[in-house]
Amino acid sequence: MSDNTGAADDTVDAFKKAVKKGNEVQLDFIKYFSSVQHDAMQNFFSMLQGMTQYNAMFKTTVQTGGRISIPDAERRALNIEEGDLVQVILIPIERGRKSPNETK
Image (cartoon, rainbow, N blue to C red; front, side, top):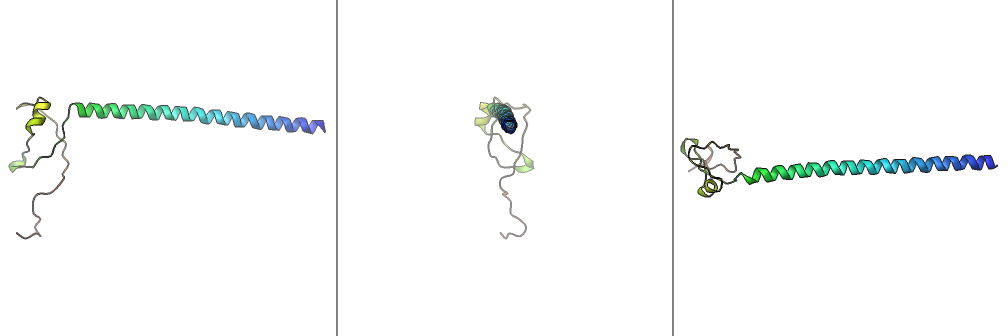
C-alpha cells in the first residue's frame, strides 16, 4: 500500500511542478508582452511629440485656382517664409459648393 501512496505522491508532485512551471511561463509571457507594449506606446508618443513639435494644423478655404493660404500665426510659429517648401496633407472637411441638384 505504501507503493501506491508513493506513486500518488510522485504524481501530485509532478502535477504541482507542472502547474508551477506553467505559472512561471505565463508570468514571463506577461512581462515580455507588457515590455513590448510599453515600448510601442513610448515610440508612438515620441513620434506624436515629434510630429506636433514642428507642425501646425489649421482650416483654410480653397481659393481660385486651387490656392490655399497658411495663416500668419502658423507661418510665424514655424518660421515659414515665401519660397519655403512645405508638405501639405489635405483632409476635406466640408463642401462649400452647391451640388447640381440644389436650387439657388
